[in-house]
Length: 182
Image 1 (cartoon, one colour):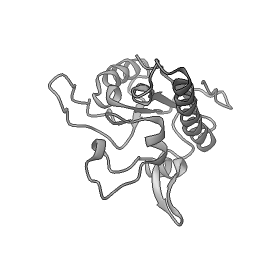
Image 2: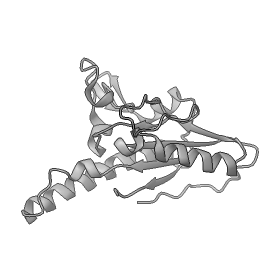
Image 3: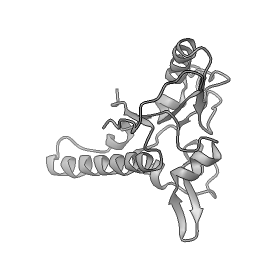
C-alpha cells in the first residue's frame, strides 16, 4: 500500500517530519539511526523524527538511539496492537501500557491519530510515515493448514488496512510507506 500526498510541496526552508511505526526491528533503533543520518545529511539538519519512544537498549546488540531519533517501535507488536492496545494497568507489557495512538474517550479506548499528531505538535501529520510491521502477525499462522492460513492472512491484511486508512484519514498529505517484513 502506498499513499501519495494530495499536494506537491517543496522541502526547502522547512523541517521534514518522519514517523516510524514498527516492532522489535524498529525498537532496536539501528535502522532508525541509519535513516536519520542519511536524511540529516541530505536535508541539512532539517529533519525531525516524531515519536514518544526513545528506548534504552534491551540487549547488547541493540543500538542506543541517536539523541534526535524518536519512534513508535515496540518488540512483538502487530498491526492490531497499534490500533487497539490500551491497558494502562499493565505497566510493562511489550514495553508500553498502551498504543501511542489509542486514548481513553467517552466510550472507552479509541484510536485517535489526530490527537497523537496534536500531542506531537505536528498538526496535519508528518511528511512521511513508515510502517515496519507484519512479521509478528504471521508467527502463529500454520502453512500446513491452508484454510487457517488464508483466514489468518486476511485478518492481517484487514488489520493493516484499518490502521493505514486511519493514518491516511488523519493525515491525507503524508506520504505513507509500508516495509514488508524481512
